[in-house]
Length: 533
Image 1 (cartoon, rainbow, N blue to C red):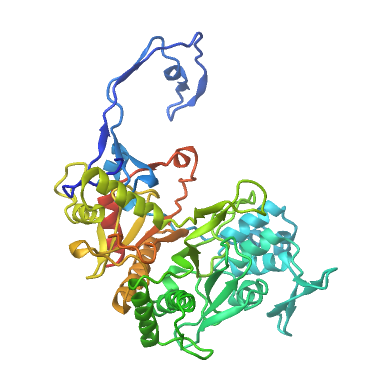
Image 2 (tube, rainbow, N blue to C red; image 1 turned 90 degrees about the vertical axis):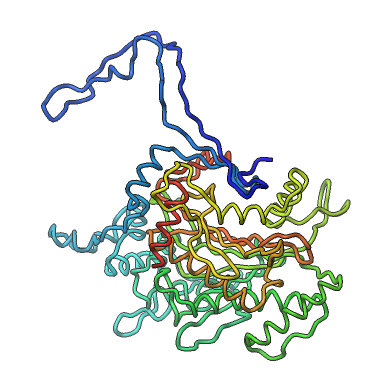
């Protein structure tokens, strides 16, 4: 079975130690001048044109680590790169972007800032995503759309135009520029609010839940009714009086509010499907009410009841960026927002057309792939996958054999969960959060998670984001791998946090599930622990 986890509670991996000969099939040689060195001597290309065959006697060693979860591929670590990172841990960091102010640059050159209005669109887009000067950004915002303004010039709303069908749409002249500048954290809040944050600014999605403003936080729950997720999904967005564009601004109260809406919506939907009463009134549920409802749902499931929905779906794309070419590089919005939904057990199956169903297909949920790994591992080894996996994490040893450096993979943990670096990272900076499984028992989904476990999960998610942001990550995808409701597998609830790094574009290697890394996972874990103090 293709996994690095073994029944002995250890990790296994391969090491490529290449030495080989390459037959030279080139006909002609060229020796061209490439330039000159600091002494003025010519630098030529003769090294590129060997006269005979090429003998590679000692190429870089490559570690090959099968992912614990086989469907996530394999990670390859270049030993030379990783050794350099072990010697210099500060390499594991993304530098903060430099200050950029085109208005100041233009004035220094005797040119007025109105030149920004006439820049070609790709240059405006580049400035919108990189400028740290609010003056640049306000000017770009006014280039992208029309505002209603107060007497002092502060925007108080957008201009709207009426379409032929009678619907109203914001008068946006350049949608790419509008999105890019509205998502720049340095744009003044008054612009952000009217462009994208105020309820209704991004369309008519209904607000169907809320964590009311409490002096610390404020979150709205939007329904995305025509969603790419069948049956709609929900988005918990920070409100216009609690703007959060950076992880450093996100507190424990914000995370509790965001996650409360996820738990609340999921429990209320399941209760309705199981015929259970939900607390009445147009208000948020208290923590005690939420736990009482969860217990009632869990009891029904234990007695064999099966709701229409059988799995949760939760995710969070933090961070936004556009390339000047117009390629979106990550999420649709910088403002903190989390999305969630419920998934059915199966979906109607068709062989042709849309009219006559021929049966059912299992509806996809990413946690199902983990369930398949558990069953395959049990058949192959006669052992419990996650019990072995968590023993391997607890007893981890470094691949480079060094005993003078830290060997732990765990970044943070408590009695319920552990936040750790997977032995084989699919993103160079991947973290995972997992519920513990003492005695082969684990919490596998949010219905099984009591109030204390939910609090640990919420704290662990925040810790992961804080650690990654502390190292400079600005774009992070977070996903949940839940167990199906009613399953009796020992399948811990798992979250993966996947940062995007500047030089990891997701090209052909990643498309083959070959993930290239330049550090040992133990060194990355140590770097994350330092961020959490």
